[in-house]
View 1: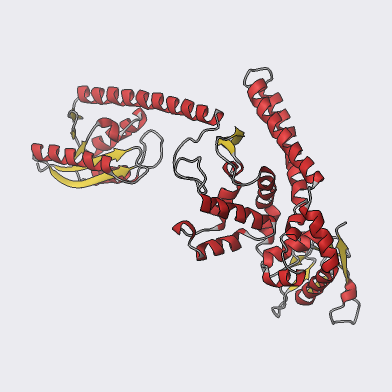
View 2 (view 1 turned 30 degrees about the vertical axis):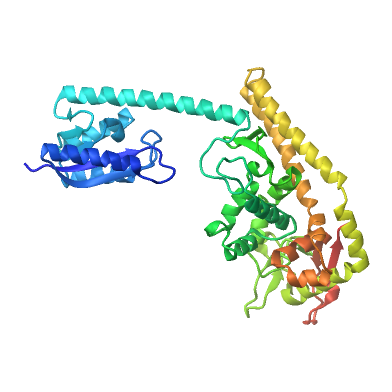
Amino acid sequence: MDKRAGIYVRISSDPQGLRAGVERQEADCRALAESRGWTVAEVFADNDISAYSGKPRPEYKRMLADIESGEINAVITWHLDRLHRSPKELESFFEVCDTARLKDMATVTGSIDLSTDDGRFHARIMGAVARKSSDDSSRRLKRKFESLAQNGQYKGGKRPFGFERDGTTLRTEEAALVREAARRILAGDSLRGICADWNQSQVADRTWVPQALKRILISPRMAGLREHKGVVIGEAQWEAIIDRGAWERMGGLLTDHSRSRQQRARSYLLTGHSYCGFCDSRMGARPRTNGTRAYVCHPDTGGCNKVSIKAEPLEELVRDEILAALDSQALAEVLRAASGEDEAQKELLESLQADQTAIDQLAKDHYADRLIGRSEYLAARGALEGRMGATRKALERNTGAGVLASISTGIQDAWESRGFDWRRALIGAVLERVVIHPAKRGYPKFDPDRVQLVWRA
């Protein structure tokens, strides 16, 4: 019977995508097939995929399907551990082979006869040894990464944006872009707008999307902090790209869920700022049946459904009032205040850092040494994290100074030249809310007397 062999090759790690390992394996397997007079029907190559991690191996699955269908009736691999590093997976492989009556399997390092109990026993022993080797390697790697994290060192891997390949030295051009992006976020710009500019400039020869940029900006690495398993554990051995205080404020803005909700209605300037003067509910953006944009106190959002107003004249009124309020003299005073040291903000940052240190010490010095139990640890940690959440909210409320400080020209020029998100941020910086009172009966025109602006102190 003609032997139609499937060659299976795999290598666990190939970060540079060279495929050198799998190609060497394939060459050796082809030589073995030729020496046995077997025809190579197909090659299945899982490159840069570990058999120990449990991640899907698409080519391995395709090989099993070809065994089941009879496309191949023999298997060649360089070593048995290229196929399996899990005893459970090995037994499943035996079941597939039994069903398809595949009994011919060869390895470059020594053949295995699956038709005999001794052959399978030998395969099981080799599988157990491979599993033990993987467990030992995994344990050593975990300890290595823990040690690197505790010392604030770079663990290796893909080059982080803003840094050279050593993960420690700043890449000047990219670091400058990150700082500028952080400044723009604090000044009210959006991730979407920054991505559009970066794509136009072909930054790093890739296509930028908001989520990818957000991950970079909120990464503790940008503030010179070392993270391990999702937890900041201390200072890193590389220089911070973004000042710690600015990074905290920016992180609060970018992880604020209300910000993402507000950005869905991108043609409505006052969503989140406008309130019903009858029931005090927040008004939503609702186009009327004729397509006219409007703000409505709608039952879907818990409103009374008794107050609505056209969007365009309302937004124009709010704009004009803000521009008039921030005249040259008033704006100069605001900018002077914004450029100075904000003591309240400094205290909030110090409180945030103190609570983070307390959490770290709680884990390292109390829970790890079994001085407190798990329930006590979780309760104490929860209280600290709750306080940190409130502190971050307070920091978000202090970002108005950054928006105003970003104005390098007159307020009129800034309003016209800046984008939608900056205008929204400016409104939030100077107004507590825009209250819309019920309309007068028999007065269909826009009535500015219905609008009450509540200014921030």
